[in-house]
Length: 121
Image (cartoon, rainbow, N blue to C red; front, side, top):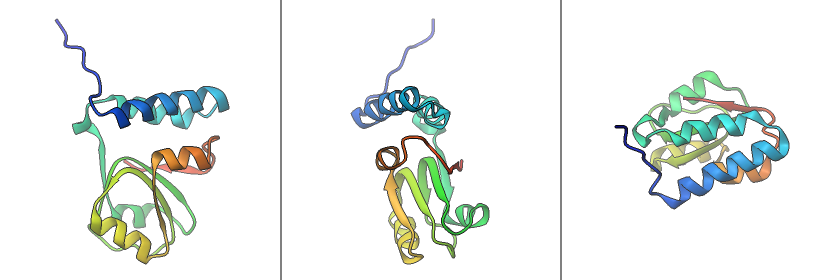
């Protein structure tokens, strides 16, 4: 018999339902994909270092990390990063490079169509 689990963090439950609603309303499959990833167990969430963000992005990109951003590495580009969580050092390095740290909820409000959003995992 399989065990049915639900999210105990109300923020995650609300975020998943918001992503699904926004996906349906705007026809943006990117939000549906992120909702599916966040429905998985938390230990499967992405953990992305600053060095990976620097390696795979260009100036002005919008990056979405369905997990936590960690502070290992150097960021030389101005990027907007949305994630569930940021380590203190990662947030500091992004803002020092004139980038923007935001939650996934804020990104969905700013860009409901999901245009030009790159997912890093």
